[in-house]
Length: 224
Image (cartoon, rainbow, N blue to C red; front, top):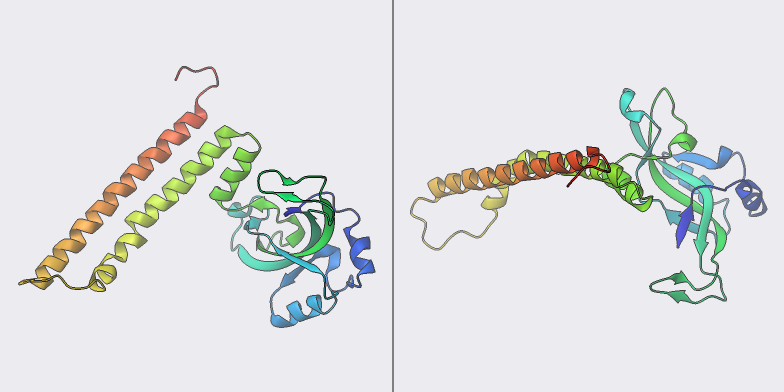
């Protein structure tokens, strides 16, 4: 099954027949900030209403340039494409015939800003890994490589930083060695060695990220 994020012109009419009040979800969106919000939305739906989850963290375009962005949970009315009752799903090809579209209540995370806090405008993938997948799906190899470079750089920072900070606690939780005459000294040496190894691996990730970004900037007719 897949969720459609465009062509929602008649979604309001469809949901009106299901009894979803416009006051509950104005413009087809609602920020869910409490259990009361969830109750108000769900109580307006029939028992057989389809519910889905958007796995992609989406944001308002240009959100990185605005101060104090906030991440919220939103409910959205949209269409879900699924195999019809008379079709047979295939592991490789999905539905054998044309799928049918059914209305769905979709929950997802959105990054909003104080300057433009509309959940309806939060349509841009926020994380570089999601941007990379979208770019590869649309044939934009250069954008894919740039976003992948950003992913590797971020992971390199985590490996050299936060992951390295967790080394002492991780080693302390391991079963002790058989015969350790100077356990404290060996423990400190193990910590230093593992942190150095993580730092070296982080540098390799950064170098790979630089290489991918350089490939993305290479002209199409440039020699390899």
